[in-house]
Length: 214
Image 1 (cartoon, rainbow, N blue to C red):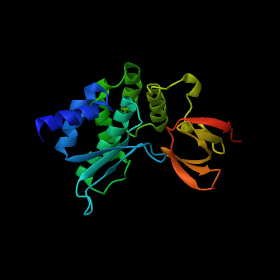
Image 2 (image 1 turned 45 degrees about the vertical axis):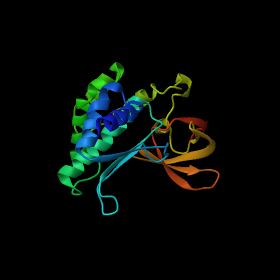
Image 3 (image 1 turned 90 degrees about the vertical axis):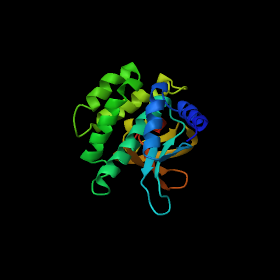
Image 4 (image 1 turned 45 degrees about the horizontal axis):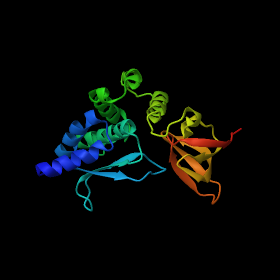
């Protein structure tokens, strides 16, 4: 890659990542020949990783472009851990099994200094043992949301904090009305109350409650 292209790429990364993370993330993407896609907001996921296949013979990571820099880094490291796990174990292990958790733990420790000071202690606690703690993961994502440009304590509510049966609107898409049905690890099965269809929605999505579940 030409020096001018490298600088343009790093400037683009700097629009989405904390400044301290730009160079090491660039080095990782370059080393592993990763195609990075920064996407529009997706209800079902914050990011994903795709390993090489005949129709796309390259490593691919996508991350939602609406995330604040610290949340973007959190998701980026999650997907980088999937890449590392696939390179070491192929498809022989569970997607979020102990092998992936250890890779994620190591990456979080490596990039710890790129996160805000108030997140250091919960991140250290999160990384202190395997298996990783889902409740602490949810708490960290709530703290990461505090760095959204439009964050307000009055709107500090995520789907993960609701109980099944609660009707809600997504902060990012207030025109749609959903009911929370069942939690599936990091995502919820939700029903669109206008058309009856079910969707997987990220538990980190910010919401406004319309009616509490019983």
